[in-house]
Length: 294
Image 1 (cartoon, rainbow, N blue to C red):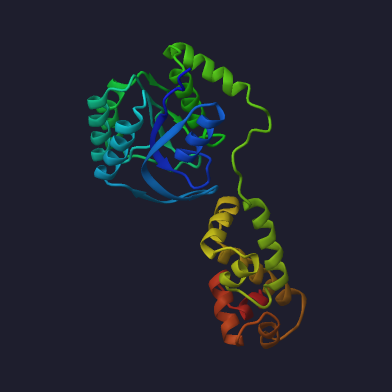
Image 2 (cartoon, one colour):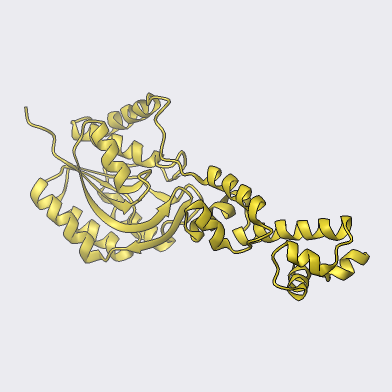
């Protein structure tokens, strides 16, 4: 018995594996299919969201697609993230020329965190050039329970590749996803745990260190990632959280002790009383002396 041909997925890369080409390949294989891929965009991404896109030029995308189609002759093509109009045009041109039996498109316009993935102009180009070529177009959706759109469209692709009709494939794909085991989850990051570890570190070291780089080093992460975590969870930068803790301690010492400012500055690691005063006035709008008098 002949094995089904490979399914070609044309989409972006997601380094977390929760979406994009990585998720497509994994899920297609889990369903017993064979996957080939052409990458349209490379993302700088983690479980907190997308930091940057690097969109491949149309010529590079076209060459990837043609190399796979000429050799493997896939009859089912799954189209995902297309972010450039010239890439849309190139993909549409190749699909029109080689005419695979089925083309699937699942429009995902925003990420799970509300990040816009493509412009209205690009989506208009997709509507004009890609959608008329499609056998199945799924409803526009967000990337919620991260990667849901990938799993559904990948399941449809596998079922179409086995010879099911489009309506049957879509129905069976939804049933298949509903029957996934409860333990089937997408990758999750360490953000919650890291945030609590950061707060613990601030509590231990705020009287000695106010530099974000120090805390990032203590936690063995990059300072930009630590910033992502605190902004996502608390809506504040690491520096703001550190400074707020230092300010709270200054307020406590000003209101519950008679320590002179020089002693308070020394206790909290400031280089001088003047340094303390500048910091406190920036945080509270008044000098430490004025605050104590009030």
